[in-house]
Image 1 (cartoon, rainbow, N blue to C red):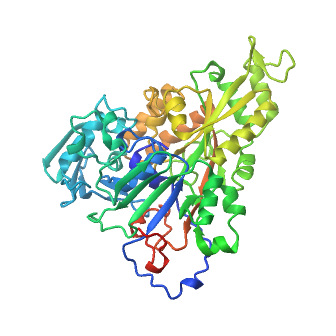
Image 2 (tube, helix red, strand yellow):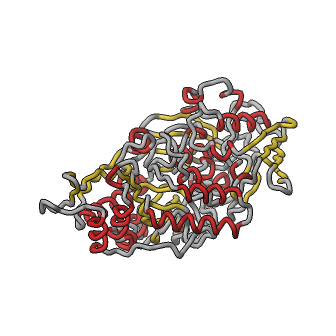
Image 3 (spheres, rainbow, N blue to C red):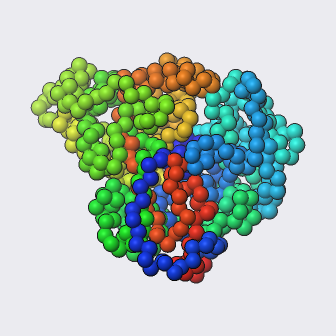
Amino acid sequence: MPLPVICLLLLGLLCGCEQAPVDQAADKNISTVPSPGGTLIQGTIGEPSNLIPAIAADSASSAINGLVYNGLVRYDKDLNIEGELAHAWEISEDGRTITFHLREGVRWHDGAPFTSADVLFTYQLLVDPDTPTAYAERYKQVSKAETPDAHTFRVHYEKPLASALISWGVAIHPRHLLEGEDVTASPLSRSPVGTGPYRFVEWKTGEKIELKANPDYFEGQPFIQRVVYRFIPDPSTMFLELQSGGLDMMELTPIQYARQTETPAFKRNFNKYRYPAFGYTYLGFNLRRPLFQDKRVRQAFAHAINKQELVDGVLLGLGQIATGPYKPGTWPYNPDVRRYAYDPERARALLKEAGWRDSDDDGVVDKEGRDFSFVLMTNQGNDSRIKAGEIIQRRLAEIGIDVRLRVVEWASFLKEFTNPGDFDALIMGWNIPMDPDGYNVWHSSKTRPGELNFINFQNTEVDELLEKGRRTLDQQQRKVYYDRFQEILAEEQPYVFLFVPDALPAVAARVHGVEPAPAGIMHNFIRWHVPLALRKYTR
């Protein structure tokens, strides 16, 4: 889901990985010394929207872009910041200048040399008003960017920015292929050229994207030589493909994890993992719609929805209740915000206070001749969101609200409804970055089409808190600001925060080198390998 694109693969992950036992008896005589070769086929419910990171805001695009491109920095397996295209950096004492020292000898996939000019170009691309990006805000805080030489990049800020360093985890774009071009019309949107561990091979619309290992990658050639992402919108179909050997990796649904993977055959052929995802699922209201502009109505929704029922019934206990936009147990999380117990009577009373009564005894509350009826949307392929929508639909009917649930294919969901803000309410999810700066999602200046505050939430105090929070380097003081921010969200309920699901990936047991860590399982993907005797593809 949107937030800085390069971080999306890593920031949805946290520690506590749990690996199912796998019968390795058949592998006792197989050499496990890593060697290049083999293919990994991964299932994904969504097809990417764009493979130019600056203008892609969806997780399906980010999964591909994360293997094709690099940033200057990234999070390591323990969620500490480390260098990527930058091997070192210095931050001035006042926190307003960062000097990056770039790796030498790095080349783009087409053979062109990577230099500081590419970093400067990426900065200019992000702040260009003609670039339709949701990520410009942090780069607009830069007062000056310069390239003292081909391997040095320096940025200056007028005011300290708490997330300045990790903001340069953004994917660096190739100047020689994009400069002077209309980025929205570039062929790189479907045929990307990066510096990353994998090179683009092909994109068959509606079918797959294929990547191959970059033999010149600066951290060493990845062991797995071919990675294929297959687009399978239905998770049940995807699971059948996994079991039959058509896939090597997928994200399991809770019912698949808990009830369909305990067979000897599955345990023999796959490893499965469980860890709290760094993300949450929510019901968001379009605050442009008159139906949802009274906060008493939104609070009524919060009382009408039984969140524990969702955790137990949708996630089968594989998750926890959400109360705000931060992960429980992390430093920005405020455990003391207002909570809304499941209380249908209180929900009905709040609706009545807001003027909604069932005046014609048809079972639906109405006001000024209008029934309280709306469309609740979510995306195809996400069973948890669809099932949550069905349960919420029933619970809201109990308090006199008519909900029509609509499930839409992912790309259409983004392009036709979410990005232009053409919806009543929706069930979606956000990945949560390690830094709590929520400016792009919650600030009132970010409500234009294509930006991330697509529900049109506007609150002057929240704006001030977000501005202070991003400018403060002291973590304790930042927490004061973000604690208050969460209190306002809990009172206003622009979202009903539903749950924090567990991540539940399954990986074929023939794939070796998977190492669970605080950053999840993808942190060392280039070191995953398939022993020669276990390879089952000819290329």
